[in-house]
Image (tube, rainbow, N blue to C red; front, side):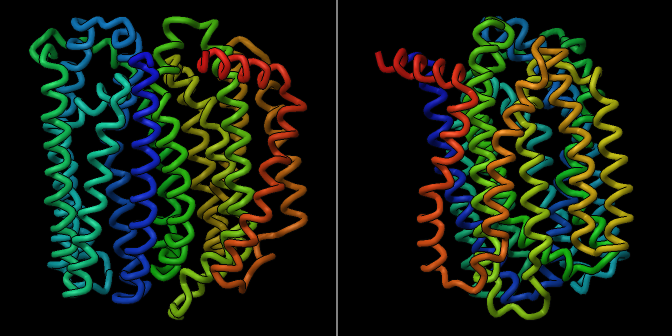
Length: 500
């Protein structure tokens, strides 16, 4: 097996294991929080978590800009160029590390002493600080190595370390939760183990890349698009996190808790999809810069299979998720967690968001950040303005509606730009995939709406899920094979070549 193929295999396997552990723990802890502290405290903790997700914006621009800049030199093993890019990245991280520390202190003070949370001020202050410590360590020590490892196809090392982190930290949290009601001690367990995980990745990278020279002359031009990248990342953060913050201001923390419970299921699926893609994305990124003809053929197969798989996943979620949420929140009566329209809107939102990822990756590989930053700005404006108006009118469902409207704009223009301006082919190659799979999705949702199996026990729901998957999955596969004959022909030839 070629080294690159071996790394893809390791990345995929480690990503799957990581996601299994993450999903299991992610569903268990919120339920325990709801039982021990109630929906309001769960909403406060979720809001703090989302704020720190926004804090990633400080490094998001340089992170993605560095990733794009490294594809070519890593593929060609140009160590001098890699060191120059990494030296520039290291300089940026050190500067923003101090800014990050100041913002963490400001957020801790505001949420502890100004925003009414229903939790003791000293506890809120400590929770925010402990949330921020691992990221602060990452800024100054580890983050730059992580970028290089991902571009080099060594995501499996990060996956394995994060699997252990989530396994042991969540076991520790559960033990603390069973023995005491100390929120600070729960967060301290994660903080300590997270720092240890970062140290491990740092030590691995130091051994793996002993030639890396951070004293080399920094190549700031290589990451000159970091500001344009930041605009794209801000747009992504608005899409992923604004809903919770708007709901916390315009509604209440119980509504935030309802949104968070639905989002747990979708975010874990999205995380799983992203983890699988990252397993081989580095190879596509390197191929884009070294063999464009092979890239176009490979990308056509990847896009077809990805969009088909995405529709299958969200079709099954649309049919079977609501009864699963009813089971998960059974016995919790301080907020209404059964919402048919919210569930359907979540499915549409995530289908649109994940379906455009192949086109988004084309833009990342090509480095077309500056040329498309206006698209990201318009998406943000649409998202925030429509969401605010819709929340005031329709409540929690309005938050999702605003995001869907923004996604329809961004997805359409992103598909056009990636195909027409970068790949040099008709955008209808991608629109065709959406029409094929969208027609099947619409047909199935007409047969079974989101509440078709409400009230079933977990065992009966599982049986129904298996039975209906046996015809839903083949239906998608047959339709795509009929309308994408050339792509599947190339796929079978590639599989036979790999086996030979």
